[in-house]
Image 1 (spheres, rainbow, N blue to C red):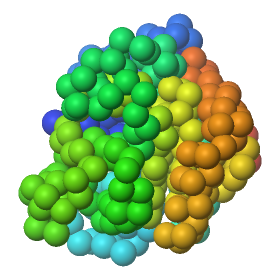
Image 2 (tube, rainbow, N blue to C red):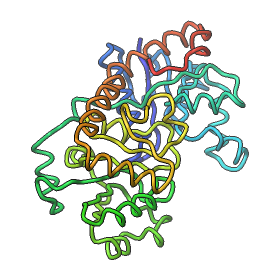
Image 3 (cartoon, one colour):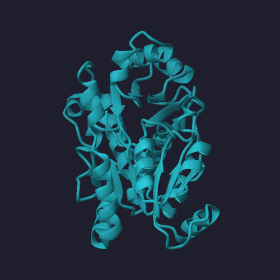
Image 4 (cartoon, one colour):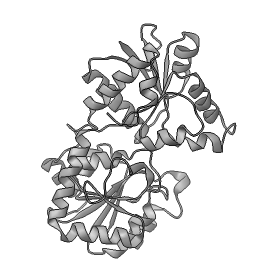
Length: 335
């Protein structure tokens, strides 16, 4: 079998591009031949992560079977239906696809409310050979940002905006003024103003804003606790990366985490400012809990490693090519 994976958008530092790269590596680990953004005629199917001319030619002119990866909130297709080219394209690809892949049970549940198609849950995955404890990366990154060797570092990874929970993150920095907080991620022009980096740094002396970091594994290696107060996620790639790096995570209690993150077992969940405060206090003062969440979180991440993701994709492709859709309709797990 040969799969042509397409990602036709000049993106860097976005979760969708991480998923694309992880899919490619996962498929190769499962002995699937992979083309990327190719116009070659010899692939068996096209898996479009971001639609564009290549996937259009392969699917609608050369009639290659289409797998479409929906990498944004399914509800957006209804809210802005007919309201833009990208939305029209996504709806068109959904209608033409043999199978749609989404990265969480939450997304499948939402999409099934108004789309009658085979939908498969495929994790975005995590590269556990890259995201792991690494003393050298930890030392180098901390030295660069003036963080001492044994200093506790609470951190987050993501775009600097409200949706990702920057407000909640800064509230915790204001509560724990003796602890260093670090946020790694871009501040896009349309989010500047309230979230202007210079204003944040001036107001919060214990907050470090790195901007875009090329090697995100260094952030996770340097950090101790991932504080992830995001209001909306399709899966939460930084959570998987932190867990693979054996860092405990504190997440906002939102639906996407319901089926794979368990409060007190592999994470701590919070709904309010006081919940986040209590959770961080527990991790700061309870080493046993810290170690338990680190261990169990790592075990969770391993289930999402690249080989597991590639194995799931291989199965989806086989079923799609055989037009055997019943197992996909009934599939709500990552395995």
